[in-house]
Length: 591
Image 1: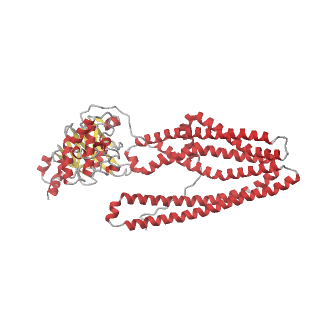
Image 2: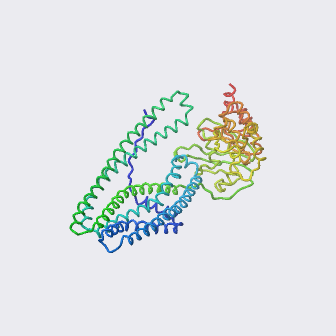
Image 3: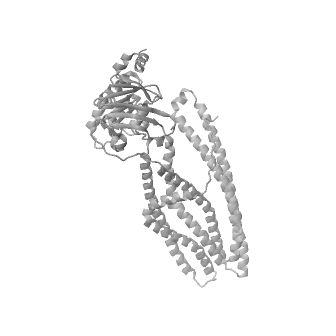
């Protein structure tokens, strides 16, 4: 049985005015600056298209010259062929290169703009949108746009010109044969459309099931420890096998439809050619057309058949790309983080909440912070305690300005934090979370993250203060040791100390510790806590913790429940009350 089943409606695969508008916006903004490349490339495209259109006429003249049906000699026609081929070859080369120049440069700029926009979206945007989907927009959608804007659009234009031009030339050769040929094409087109819809429907279902199987494989690999701990290798394999079997069956079905379509097109095109040859032979015998006319007519018929066959795929590709363009343009509707405000540098670090209430955007009806007020003087340490869901981590999110839509005021040195430039504000805030994020580069890169012109001595000093240098210097590569994805090559305590070293090097005035030792063993906790004690010196600190070791030396404790303060005071004052939450916490951890 599958973990979950989800039915998706078949989306309409057609061009809408809105999607075409999005495609045009991107084309104008990102390929417009390269108009010279596009213009010259289009001229080259027209030269190759015109060359393709006149080539059957040249073949006609060659045949008629050989049969003495025209006054030109075979050598004269041959010269024209050499010139035409040379021009077409050069034009084809420059068309591809010029369109690639415009497409690659324009799409590189588009990718940069999208990434820059994504990286400046607020945190809650990433809570509502899957990173995999956003990455797909950045990579796959832009790649599709690149191919379409630099190749598909020009090819669509080329095929349309070949179709119209080819039919025009056919009428000049023989109106009778042209009507004979055109009478067959509508039948082929109708059946091709029907087969095409079935292929598209089944191909989409195949991709959906393949996507599910890929997601299943990725999930089971990420959770391999859990899979093995339950002995569920065979269970996961069976789930994957069912999906892959469905993919295979759908693939076979798609192949059958494609085979039917290929058979139809082959039968239709060759049947049309045989019909044209049969009818044309009688016209040659009557003297209505020359043998060269018949040869040219057959070549034009093949050209038109290829153009008709290609137009459907090109239009489908254009429709998909227009949808991709619309998804990219849709990102412009999301608000970026507020970067306005006054830049700050030297601060005292006094922090205060005044009647702050807050609800997450995804749950606007549920307030997680209710009329919260407190003052934290510069250099002092405040601990937030309470049950899970009481609002502790939300307070840190608000301090870090991950969310700004709130009631009340949060101030730094008596200035509303919303009035301060975001980048300079966050430069003063240091965060050490429970689940630290380690980049896949070296230890050096992780510690010096975002800092320019950092000396080796600065990095080593921060490592020593974080109790990290002892294990780092024993590694064969030292600071140059590659940590792997999410720091897989180090233990949890070691990663935590690398994170602390990174924060020490940042040298923030305000420090936020969000349960920084809760997931560590006793030995690692002792080393990390020593590092945290050094880090907290002379810094305004907000500590969230369930362990006494983290909060025993703070100046003030606030106990939260449902986003409200239920008690506050110094550790000494709360112990004197006897029945405080802090006292219960002490009793529980001493038992």
